[in-house]
Image 1 (cartoon, rainbow, N blue to C red):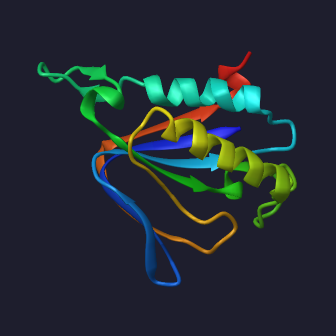
Image 2: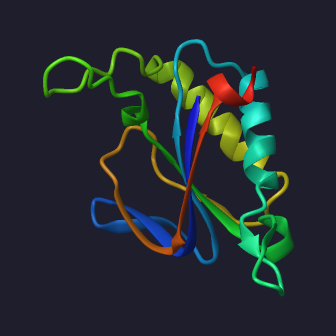
Length: 150
């Protein structure tokens, strides 16, 4: 499982030119799943996501987590995080998870995050989405379950 996390001042996702999810200060999170992912792996990744201390405290140090700043989440499914670009110039996506499993894990992540964060917005699984954001920093973190869940 892979998460690409961007600290944002605001972000939104549109499908067919209609906004389906939006947040203010918080994290825009792109989520990619593969066939070996499980709910246990998702729990570890969610724990790491929600406890990342990448917001500035009163001294300008990155000491605060999402809850400490009343941050919000916008979570977007993105199978392209598993692009394999080693051969040629056209990426292969064979490492991306089976869509049924990936959607089940994506829905699980949304549910678990909503249990701890009051505002969790999301895109539509499998849809063509347009993402708008105001990146804060920029500050981007990549979480890979292969590194987190050893």
